[in-house]
Image (cartoon, rainbow, N blue to C red; front, side, top):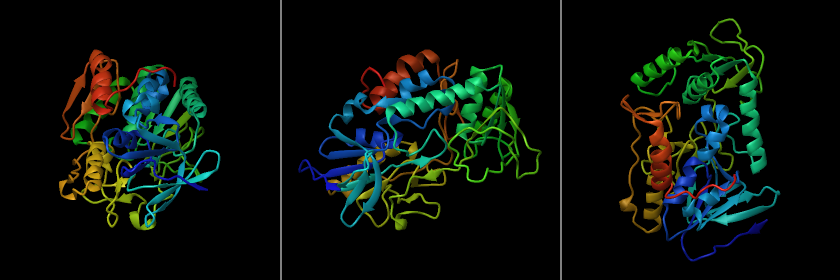
Length: 382
């Protein structure tokens, strides 16, 4: 084990996790700090838009599999691939296990925990290289393409996205969508739930409400399954060629986090400033943060608020910190980019649509690339 000392006199911010949210925190911290981002992946592997990832992987990779070198705002950020195995709040340091098994200690003045959750093969904290990541994306898409019938279990946004995108991409396949509630998308506005249910019926997805699956013993939700699925709600077993499990059994990536920072489900407790109670220089944001029942700081500009509050803390201006106010309902695009464009649903149940030409020419290159990510370089190869 070797200790890595500070490389400059600037305050040091360590970001534990460089997924969708942690990456944006690093980008928006701004100058004046030494920033270290720690990631189990060598690049951004987004957990978003699983439906597109499985049905149009080359399109998905253009926006959701990104080399860290493509972000100009990361040029002054140190990026370390490894897994955090210990957090010592007294010494203000984390221990990182590297891919070769070596360990090193990284000190911090402020820590942002954005380690996310594991939820199926598409969201995990495994130490991987780029080849294995690309191979996994390709294999999963091939399995979907080869199956003549698909079962999706779990009525959240991920299940909806997969059901809709598989049916649109492969209209000859039978798509069965099972969920335990009367309608899909728990946590979304009732108008959104109804609209999405109507859309799935219209495109030919076979809907099966009121089904709660029995989880196979020891199953880690890390792969497709074959064979019949049984139900705790009493229906007869059902079998399709391939089954995707998106039942919401998220597992917080919390193995390095002290127990007094966690709630009863293993997520990181936060106050109204997205700060961990009792630790004035430790913040949590994204799916790991227990901000509200939906853990909604993964959206709703949570990354921007944390970046602001870290700056305020390290500059001794805690009075200037901003409070996080979660919306009452989940919101977002849900289906991803479709033939008619991208529809985004608001927390109040209304929606707006970006035409496909606007998505390609304005939304991703300008609104996402230039505004949210503060610039993205042209791709070479990823």
